[in-house]
Image (cartoon, rainbow, N blue to C red; front, side):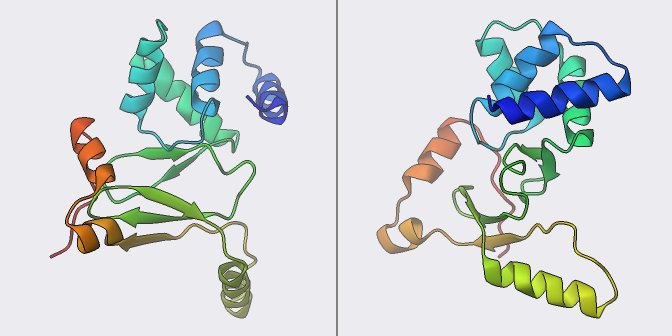
Length: 166
């Protein structure tokens, strides 16, 4: 885990008058061990696989605390679940492209979007703080070849895919 994340979290916990706990530390380690988006249930399963005894309630409390500390963000990926993104610390203005066929999520940044965001918000009398954009698209692999490994993997893992609009 990035040293900066640990320092920011420790400072936030101290300001809130909370104490360090081993279970919260396990949760934070698992979250920031990768840059993957996750649902609370996926996080809970990752913790279980590592032998953690953290309860679901502890997981939800930790997620709330990390979101309040601005270390993770809840995002809508169109699958009807709460998803969390641990990548906003280093890239606060990134966006998401979500394949409605296979559920693959691609993060991207674009200076043109940031400029547009800045122009629109200032014209309307606001000051931009952050942006988040979700684009839903169809999978090129599936369309061109009739198959998509990401779709197969998503089905094998039992992932709920974004609601496809017909």
